[in-house]
Image 1 (spheres, one colour):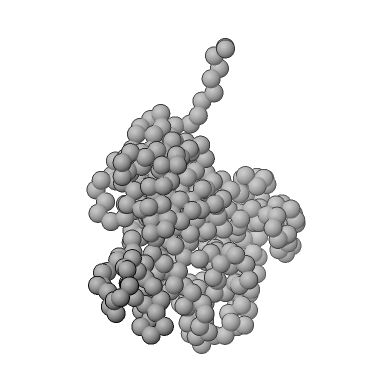
Image 2 (tube, helix red, strand yellow):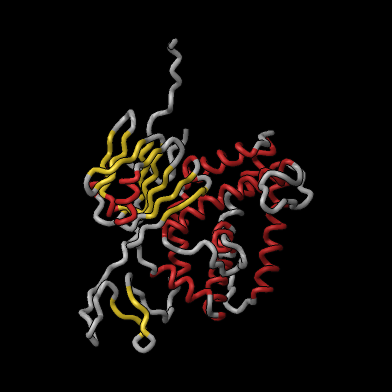
Length: 340
C-alpha cells in the first residue's frame, strides 16, 4: 500500500522544534502517560508530547481513552475521526485552549465585500495561472471557470477515449446518479471534500464560512476542494472508467494513492493559510483568550477584573501550525485461524 502522504518516522518527533501540523494514527491504541499521549500497536510504542501536535487524525482500527482525549483537549489539539489515510471526515473535537485567530480572520474577510471578493479572486487566480483576474467580477469568474471545466472534460474524454455526455449528480448521495463516469466523479469529489474538511478543521478555520460558495455548513470545504478537482478527481475518474474500475471504493482508493504520491495535504495547509492571510490586510492579529470591550476592542482574558481599570497584559501565543506531518500505522490485522 502506498505510504500516507505525510508519513515520517515517528521517532523523528523529538527533533521537531515547533508544533507538528498533524499526526495520523491507524490500527493502534492511544492512551495517556502524564503529559504525553502514548500510541501502542503490535509493532511499536510511540510517546507523543501532546503540546507538540496541532491536529491528531484517528484512522480505522484506532481506539482512544478518555484520559488521552482530555489531555489533547487541554493542549488545544484538534482530534479528527477520519477514514483510511484521511480520505473521509467523520467527526472532530476541538480543545478549549485553541486560539481563534484564523477563524476571526476568516470571519472578518468573509463579512466584508471588498475583502471577500479579494479572497475569491485569489482562489480563481490559483485556477488560472498567469491570467489577470484583479478586476473580474464574480459573474465573469464563474463564466470563465465553467468554460475551463467544460474544456477539461472534453480534453480528458479525448485522452482516454471515454465518452462524455455531461455532468449529472445527486446532491447528498455521491454514488446515486448518472453513468459510471459521473458516479466516479461524485465519489472522488466526496473523498476530496473529506480531506479538505479535515485540514480546515485541524487549522481552526470554519468549514462553513465560504467565499465563493455560501449557505452550506461545508461552503469553505467546497471552495478549497474546487482548487484541486481539475488536477486530481477529474483525470482520476476518466482513468478509472477507461480501466473498467467503476466502484466507489475504486475512486476513493485511487484518490488516496495520488494524494499520497503528491503529498497534497501539505499543499492544502499552505493554500488555506495563504488565502486567509492575504497581503495588505489591515485586520489586526487577535490573541487567544481575550474579552471583548466596547471601548478598547479587547482586553486580556483569564484576569480577575474586579476593582481594576487595567490588568497586566500577558501575550498568549496561539499554537503554530508547522509543515511537518507524521503517521503512526500499526501492522495489518490478522485473523486468528486457530480452533477454539
